[in-house]
Length: 86
Image 1 (cartoon, rainbow, N blue to C red):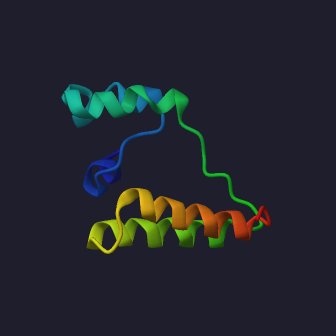
Image 2: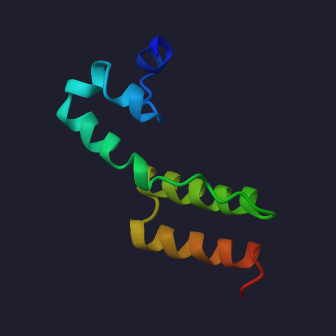
Protein backbone atom coordinates (compact mmCIF):
# COMPACT_ATOMS: atom_id res chain seq x y z
CA UNK A 1 0.00 0.00 0.00
CA UNK A 2 2.83 2.51 0.58
CA UNK A 3 3.71 2.38 -3.12
CA UNK A 4 0.19 3.51 -4.03
CA UNK A 5 0.57 6.59 -1.85
CA UNK A 6 4.09 7.36 -3.06
CA UNK A 7 3.06 7.13 -6.74
CA UNK A 8 -0.26 8.93 -6.24
CA UNK A 9 -2.21 5.87 -7.34
CA UNK A 10 -5.61 4.71 -6.16
CA UNK A 11 -6.15 1.12 -5.05
CA UNK A 12 -8.13 -1.19 -7.30
CA UNK A 13 -9.15 -3.42 -4.40
CA UNK A 14 -12.08 -2.47 -2.17
CA UNK A 15 -10.37 -3.71 0.99
CA UNK A 16 -7.55 -1.22 0.35
CA UNK A 17 -9.90 1.56 -0.71
CA UNK A 18 -11.56 1.56 2.69
CA UNK A 19 -8.31 2.31 4.49
CA UNK A 20 -5.51 4.62 3.59
CA UNK A 21 -5.12 8.33 2.95
CA UNK A 22 -7.70 8.32 0.14
CA UNK A 23 -10.42 6.95 2.46
CA UNK A 24 -10.83 10.34 4.15
CA UNK A 25 -10.40 12.56 1.08
CA UNK A 26 -13.80 13.44 -0.45
CA UNK A 27 -12.34 14.09 -3.92
CA UNK A 28 -10.49 10.79 -4.01
CA UNK A 29 -13.50 8.93 -2.60
CA UNK A 30 -15.44 10.12 -5.64
CA UNK A 31 -12.93 8.42 -7.94
CA UNK A 32 -12.93 5.29 -5.80
CA UNK A 33 -16.71 5.11 -6.04
CA UNK A 34 -16.30 4.68 -9.81
CA UNK A 35 -13.99 1.67 -9.57
CA UNK A 36 -16.81 -0.91 -9.79
CA UNK A 37 -17.67 0.56 -13.19
CA UNK A 38 -14.10 0.69 -14.48
CA UNK A 39 -13.03 -1.54 -17.36
CA UNK A 40 -9.58 -2.26 -18.76
CA UNK A 41 -8.50 -0.83 -22.08
CA UNK A 42 -9.65 -2.73 -25.13
CA UNK A 43 -6.31 -3.70 -26.59
CA UNK A 44 -6.54 -5.04 -30.09
CA UNK A 45 -4.76 -5.31 -33.40
CA UNK A 46 -4.90 -1.55 -34.01
CA UNK A 47 -4.55 -0.29 -30.45
CA UNK A 48 -1.23 1.46 -31.18
CA UNK A 49 -2.70 3.53 -34.01
CA UNK A 50 -5.79 4.46 -32.01
CA UNK A 51 -3.72 5.35 -28.97
CA UNK A 52 -1.42 7.50 -31.11
CA UNK A 53 -4.39 9.36 -32.58
CA UNK A 54 -5.81 10.06 -29.12
CA UNK A 55 -2.43 11.24 -27.85
CA UNK A 56 -2.00 13.56 -30.80
CA UNK A 57 -5.48 14.98 -30.26
CA UNK A 58 -4.77 15.63 -26.60
CA UNK A 59 -1.50 17.33 -27.46
CA UNK A 60 -3.17 19.50 -30.11
CA UNK A 61 -5.76 20.69 -27.61
CA UNK A 62 -3.23 21.26 -24.83
CA UNK A 63 -0.96 23.30 -27.07
CA UNK A 64 -3.85 25.26 -28.54
CA UNK A 65 -3.20 24.16 -32.10
CA UNK A 66 -6.71 22.67 -32.39
CA UNK A 67 -10.05 23.04 -30.66
CA UNK A 68 -11.31 20.01 -28.74
CA UNK A 69 -13.97 19.31 -31.38
CA UNK A 70 -11.52 19.62 -34.28
CA UNK A 71 -8.98 17.42 -32.52
CA UNK A 72 -11.67 14.83 -31.80
CA UNK A 73 -12.79 14.79 -35.44
CA UNK A 74 -9.20 14.36 -36.63
CA UNK A 75 -8.60 11.57 -34.13
CA UNK A 76 -11.85 9.84 -35.08
CA UNK A 77 -10.82 9.88 -38.75
CA UNK A 78 -7.44 8.35 -37.95
CA UNK A 79 -9.01 5.73 -35.70
CA UNK A 80 -11.64 4.83 -38.30
CA UNK A 81 -8.88 4.49 -40.91
CA UNK A 82 -6.80 2.28 -38.60
CA UNK A 83 -9.83 0.08 -37.98
CA UNK A 84 -10.64 -0.07 -41.68
CA UNK A 85 -13.97 1.70 -41.27
CA UNK A 86 -13.58 4.49 -43.83
